[in-house]
Structure formats: C-alpha cells, structure tokens
Length: 306
Length: 306
Image (cartoon, rainbow over all chains, first blue to last red; front, side, top):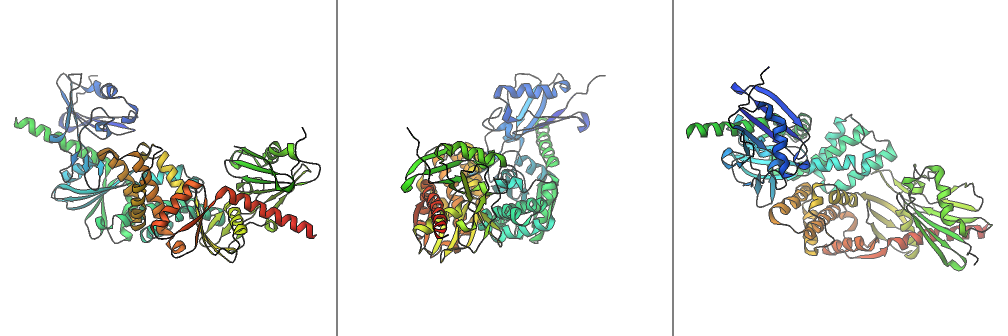
C-alpha cells in the first residue's frame, strides 16, 4: 500500500503536547498524529527530528508547508517567533517565522504570538484560535473569552485584537485542587451546580474574600461534612467569579464568544448567563485548526499570486 | 554527670515539626528538643514513642506534666481534642484533652483548637499563641493577626475570642512562588520595598484583578525584564493586599497586634502602616511557649487547690 502524500501539515505544538494534522489532496485529513513531545521536553535541536518522526511517512519529494502555532515559537522553543504587538490582526502567515529546516522537504512556518505593552501581557497559541474564529465569523465584533490554564479575554473590533488580558484562574484552580490543603476536600468527579452558581455570585460580589472563602471549604469539610462535589464546584465558582469581577468591563453588554474545551467553556457560559450575559461557544480544537488552515490558505494565495 | 529532671514539658506539635521545651526546677530551661516528627508523619500509636524519644532522659519517677498544642490534637493526630467553640476563652487546661499514656511517667494534656460555626472556621495551635499573648497582655481589647500559611484574624474582647477568620494567603504565596508559572519570575532572596508597597495598594483597591495581576508578573518578566526581587515583592503584596481588603472590618480603627515569625510579621505591619493602621508585634514562638506555660500554671494552681 502506497502511503498518501501530504499537501500540508497543521501543527499545534504546546508546552506539553504535540498534535499534527496531515492533509492530502482536496483538504482530506490523512492522519492526526499526537504525542507528548511538547516544547517543554525538547532542546532546540530536537524539534526538527520530533516533527520528522511524526510526519515523514507522508512527505513527498517537493517541499511541504508545515504551519505551526503555540509554544514552539517561544524563546525556549525551536526558534523564537517574535510577538506581534496589539492592536494587531491575529496570526497571519505574513508575520510568521519561516524556519530553515535541515530536511529540504520541510517548509516550516511558526505563527507568532501577540504581546501587549500596557498592561504587559502575552499570548502564544490563542491568537491562532482567534484567527480561526475570525475566519469563520469575519464580521464578529465584541469579546472573546478563551478559558484555560491562563484564560484570555480579548476585545475584537474590525478583525483586530484591540486589547486583551490574561487571568491565571485555571492554574490557580489546578494548584488549589491538587497541591493545597483543599486537595482533601475536593477529590471527586461529581459536581454541584447550585454550589457553583452560589460561588460565582460570592466571588463576583466579594472578590476580597477569596482567601477566606477558600479556607472556608476546608473548615466546612471538617465541621459540616461539606460534600466534595460541592467543595469542588465552589472552588471553581469562587475563582471564575473573581475573574468575572475583574473582567466586567470586557463582558458587560458585549457580544461574547467563548473558545475552548467543551466542559470548561460550558462552565464559563453558565457563569456569564447568571449575569445576563449570554455567550456563544466555539470549540478550541476546531478554532486552532481553522486558524492554521487560514494561514495555509494565505500562503497558497500568496504563492499563487507570485 | 546526673541529667536534670523535668518539672514539666511544653510541646508544640505541628503537622511537620515537633518542639519540646524541657523545664526543670525554678522554670529553668534544661533542653529544647526539635525534630521533624510532626503529626503528618506519625500514626496514632507512634506519638508516645516519639515523645519519649525526645524527653525520656529528663523524666523522673513521678508523673511529669506534658502540655501540648497544635495538630497533635487533630483527628489524624495522637487523639482528637475536640474544638472549643468561639466565642470562648482560648486554650486553657480545663478544656484540655488528658491522654492516658502507657508510660506512667507521662501526664499528657493536649490543648484544644477553636472552631466557629458561622462562618465555619477552625484553628489549632494559634489559640495557644493567643492565650500566651493574653497572659502577657490581660487587658488587650482589639484584633490579633497571626500571619502564616493560614493567616488568622481574631477579634478579642474581655479575654475571649469573639470571632475569627482564616485566609489562605500564605499557602497561596507558597504555591504561586514555587509551583506556578511564576516560579521562574520570583527566584531570588532579594526584595523590593517599593514594589511591595505598590502591590499592597493594588491588591487592596482592586482585589478583583488578582488573577490578572499575577499573570502580569510573568508577562512583565518576558517583555520588560521585571526584576525577580520586584516580582516576588509584588506577588507577596498583591496577596496580602487582597487579604487586607477582606479584613478591613477587622483592622480599621482597631487596636492591632501581630503574632508570628519576625519577617512575615514585619511585612504585615508595614502593609497595615500604609493604611494608617499601626500594629504592635509579638513573637509567635514566644507566645506559643507563654500559652503552654499559662496552661501549666493553671494546672499547678488547680492541683495546689485540690
């Protein structure tokens, strides 16, 4: 059996994960290759071998465009792709870093992250999801929320990232639920919707009580047999509520879309709905791929022009 | 050489550390024994052997009173010493749990922690420091701040704990500075006073921006070469400022004393001073010992009465 040949490859290369979508003729997906060879585990010289290991069976004799996004372009990555500075268009192939790979079959582009001068902020990876969302919704004007380890709130107007702000909410939740004294109180896969909703309201209305309300989960566990499902939902709600208090100017009365993993996006959507702020949802994975494809289409368009 | 005989022993037995002060005639300190045999590393049956290992050289033929405080009295400790419920007097020997040790030379008392029904809260160890402070300052009326992993704010009136509230500030600082993405930005032993003061003000005035300001430390590190000393001081200031925003009702216009480790207490004092709220300082170690001695004196008084 002759293996199919790639027309182009889309790569989402994060800190801890690698994913490559190999596309053949007619934009047919030939293969999705995933591995744990994330940026964090590689030396600069190890990126090209890792990429080849994943996609070489599909490379033809001609150069194959490989469009990458994520931490692969960070200072500790393959090569640093300097940030575009907001306000700016998100990830485009014109601003991409082209890497001179040793293997002549590779034509590698790394989409740049976006930075902001004041307040100082950075993103690397989310700009590609934003580009994907804007490719699918070219007239969108409003606010994008990209929940995750470092949740981004992004003001979009006329196809540009006008401003953005990052909240460490997801990382705080992970540390609190896995490393803190609260880890004993929140060990469950269950969930308590009412506890979440009350905690959103508490977090939003009294952000200054965060550190006390967190310890309260431990104390109620000791004194009142607080259920783990309630404690976990409250921990999440307090932190997301705190974030909603800090992003009020972003979401109040705005057109909102949430781009992310389905479960987390649904939590943010329900929290916003409680504030009478409805939001549409878009899959983070799909937007990543859509953003990479958008860059590839730009490249094809460009080369067709030349 | 004949070893000296203990009149009584004061024991501060926490989650990760054990400290025993062995006192002889005339309240003379014979020996301070410290070890890492904290509650967290011991099964219930291992507490008595651990205690004997530390103090048996000093035990005479008669029963020796051993007054303990801390997590030794928790559910996972030697034996559970049920909480006294606020409002109440702090740690007294009358409410202590007396443990029937196997070794007849031991007469062990464990001072109880304090709980609060609403909002649910607990302390175990701090009540002994409070008892020590009140033994030295019997007329104190106002607010005690006991900074640490789980900082306590305690309203004191007429020698009683009227109410209290715990803030996870210290644990959040430890997790953020050692386990989060910020660990790269704050690795230093240096300190920036001005950055701390500005962060106190930021944390106090905009608590809802906490998660964004934390990520800002990372972003400023990447984009503006923020110095680690400044990042670390800002991290500390943002978290303590958040706590001061949540405890305003406790400290505003109140008589304040801070009981704790010297460096951390000094940080809290300087943060409060910026809010025109001066505080006196008391050593945490000294207050622990003073609280244990106060319980011993009650015991001696009681047995002299009987």
